Amino acid sequence: MNRKHCLFCDEMVPVKPEGEYDRYEGCSCSPGGFYDLLRDSYEAIHSLPHQKKRDMLHIVSAYIREMTDCGVQVTLSSDDLESITNSPKIPVTIEDKGNRFNQYLYRHSEGPGEPVVIQPLSSSYNLTYSPNLQELVYILDKLIGEQLLIREGMTFKLTDKGWSEAAANAGGKKLKPCFVLIPDDEDQRIEWLEMLLPKIEQFGYMPHLLRDEKAQNQDNYSLERIGDSKLMIADLSSHSPAVYFTAGYALGLKIPVIWTVHSSEAGKLWVQVKDIRPIVYDTAEELAIVLQQRLSYDRTVEFQDTGR
Image (tube, rainbow, N blue to C red; front, side, top):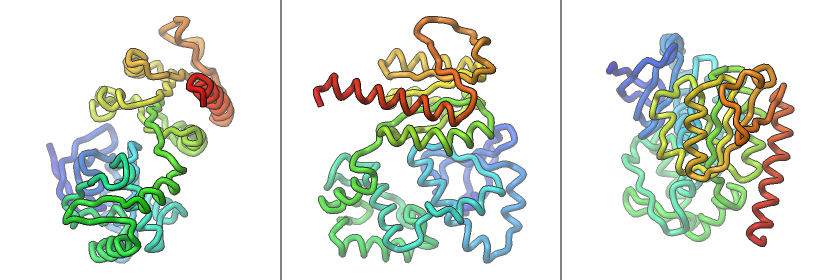
């Protein structure tokens, strides 16, 4: 396997080809995970002016880490860098950066006082979108001084106050994992990201977007990860055997599956059984409305069944 410098965290990491992309594995941008970079973008990013790289690359590293930590597959090209660094969602103030660190601890623990080990800390300043370790240490000292955080070496714990604030910033409760399987179409991926995933989040789910182009890769279609899901949305528009298999596996684990298919492909489905009754849609806007209605109905039934 080839090795390259990650342009965003400067680590030398294994890289393997995935079509027109290179997959960077296990660097500080995505410890234990990966991200994909369009191969033709490497030289374009490498040749950026030095000051622009100083201002931009650590932010992209932090973005990759936060997204992959939330289960979102990150696929980048050089054209994406400006939109990422200029996004209003990128934290700028020390307070907002501290909130991102607490959100990381919140995602990795089940309650206040539960230890989370971050090692090595020296390469984890992207957890706070910071440009260097010095700023991360300053932020940690500030969080400790505000009694939001306890630090014991490389082990960190949210206090009761820190946990409450992190929960409030996360909408008061942890989002349930949800896998979304879509065809490998860039326009459709963008539509789902912008229009559909926010609707899914409104109903208490953290959607993890998977594309069927790389379905044979176990990194994407890990059955262990599927088993942790509380909902699956499977789009059949590409007629991918992997989508059928993965969704069928989820059904075998009693995980609810919502099937969808574009109207142009609805009459071409390989499998015609009564249990697969996909939502047929023409546009992403239309599908967003129907999904919202479906999830709202499912939540109402859940509340009735549990007596809440």
